[in-house]
Length: 335
Ligand code: 1BN
Ligand code: ZN
Image (cartoon, rainbow, N blue to C red):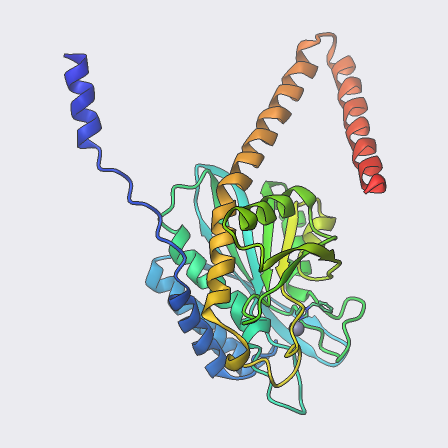
């Protein structure tokens, strides 16, 4: 009887549909439409049009967009900035954030449309939303479209850059949500038709290792190269706040910050490579986080079980945290 019931239940449950695959044709279409808007510097009418495009796409997927808007004084002007956030709930409330910028650098002397630098990351995140919206994920997924990555002045200096990521992290610290961000995966300039992405020495090693191992496993190590550089980008504010983060960026790009960063310099194939590697890495990233959270739980209960008074427990907890902090510092120094 029980066996019959079980068999019936198993048969009655429709299998969850497999998550759709990353479709570079769709991402390419978004990239083309973003480039067609023209230069999209922060504070411009064109970046407002870009936001409309992103919001329309999310509407079509049935996903809600939260706007984080503020005004900022830059070295040249005061501008209105807006980050866009899309949350796809998972089994846990803790989040994995996929981020990228959608602004283009301001150039007054030539027409800069940022096909790789600005459009590729936004197009990629839009297609990721379509793929991930029906996936049964253990962690909540956040897609974060960042404004104001680019410096307003010609050179990248001081705090005249990464306006969106710095604002987002400050707000998350303020409202206490920063602790729920378990990993951040940043994509930037991933459209280069001659794709070569190097490891970034600023990024979190375990996240970088998972992504580069996935690329090797998928025979895509011609695009995800073994050597490394050090990059300042939107992941730095997250790293400073203790969120494990990685920057997937191709800076080996002749068209970088020139009029040549247009459709001729980018390809759908490059978007597909990054899509396959990022989505292929996600289960291992999730498994790593689940293991870490289980280990943290074991450590916490072991500390508690050793008994004694509340005061003794607190002293042990402080000593344990200090030990962890010192281990992290000595680990950083030895790397
Ligand atoms: C990436 C795309 N960046 C700017 N546009 C960040 C960056 C700035 C990377 C300077 C390297 C050098
Ligand atoms: Zn740029």
